[in-house]
Image 1 (cartoon, one colour):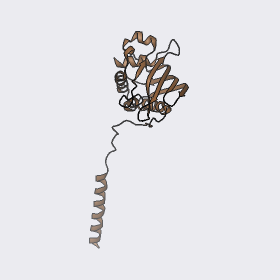
Image 2 (cartoon, one colour):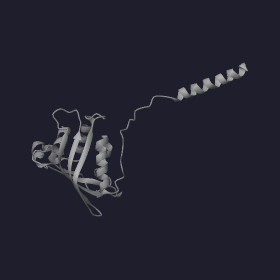
Image 3 (cartoon, one colour):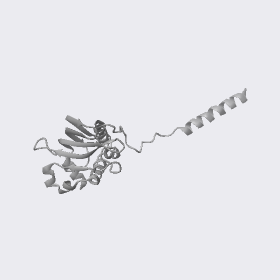
Length: 194
């Protein structure tokens, strides 16, 4: 009988040791959240852009723009007119500038802070090989950079096309003011490139 209790005690002790050995602290994920839909239609590009901003996901943000490995088109950005006179770099904006700006902006925004892109008055005109998307926007990033607006607004126009993989992306982006008093996305881009 005593031997039976010793064996039972040994089994319980062994099982406890195994269980304790398997338990460990939950690790924080290294990669940020990722919601990305294969952009098989233009509207998915817009959903992906909004998700990338909400999740502060640089890679998914950049995937919304044309990849010259799969397309003959190149990314162009037409900045808001008054912003160009204030920040001449906007006149020659390219994909490399876009990557630097979004990386700097997201790096200056704590992961727990808010970031959102709100779109309204949207209009999408699509053909088989191109799409034009117009919208009023309000972009908010709760970044830590001093003397740079956290909220910008205006009107945007995206021109999109499918690439050789039949995935859609933005190849042309134009930024406009809605009201004369607006601080536009162009201003935010220029401030985070410097």
